[in-house]
Length: 307
Image (cartoon, rainbow, N blue to C red):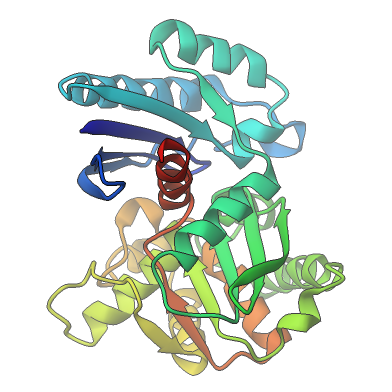
């Protein structure tokens, strides 16, 4: 048996998943941890990782290291995505991680990230035709799946943190700023040449903002296991109603909404906006949530290569 440790440094949070890989190719998750390190905070149009955000992230990685070092026979795979991918000081940060933590972070391309999302979803949900949307802190991955195969995929360079900062969606949302954000996202989506091939398909959702949307509605429904979102479904009108409820509140009042983590309240509108615009564009009637994404896709690939 082997312990596969995946350290996943996203734009808003850093996550660690530890899985037991058995000799027969099966695997079982034994530990999962998340910290909201928000490495993309303050990058702006210059795409420079900021010292405070880097230190916050390094501190989280050090805490993770103390945990995974207690697991024997381990293999550690470190990955990072959009924020580090576009950072002008990427090399300096990666070298600092190598020096202080002792792991090499592989910078996934946008297409790699989208493909691993596809693997993670297809190995865990029984669905053949859909559009997968993974909303991160600084990018969104879109994968059009037809007959179980990835027909087209793309990564677009905006997400929950970058949209919230660029259009000032953090606190009270002014109508002109919301309109500007909607116009921007809509244009980016319409520029994807194949996007209309996904008209009326169900949208499968990944990413922290989308998971929050699921938890808020499960809590509203009084369901006992609020975090048990895998395979959970919502109709489009419920998504829109939740979005309007978020827009009607300032930051202080959003933090009081059941199911919404306080540390995510300032970026939740920017995080759900891409979904709302997609639902309008594609006339989709429902969304399906998946807990399996990039990390599970990497595990699946790793197991296949070990056979």
